[in-house]
Length: 100
Image 1 (tube, rainbow, N blue to C red):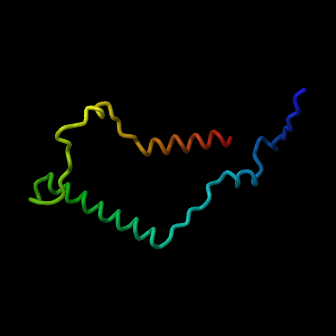
Image 2: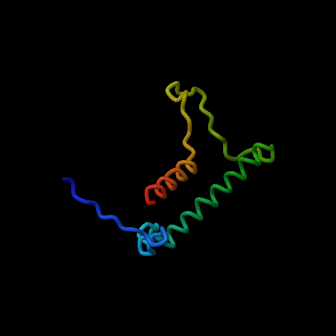
């Protein structure tokens, strides 16, 4: 005969606080160098976007040029870029469902 399973009844249908702490994500700590790198990339990208917007409206004769493939790869005809925010949302919801 199969071994009996242990069943723990929850008080008021709630998990004890100790179990909730186990499932919370660990705090991420960022070093000063990490924050400096993020700030540098963010500010540089903001500058590129401003220059692109200016060149589209005709304000600037030179600046960044948006690359467009002249001869697209036929193997990528049906390529659909991933929506990273949607993917992260799905991962987050899956974790929540697996924890409950």
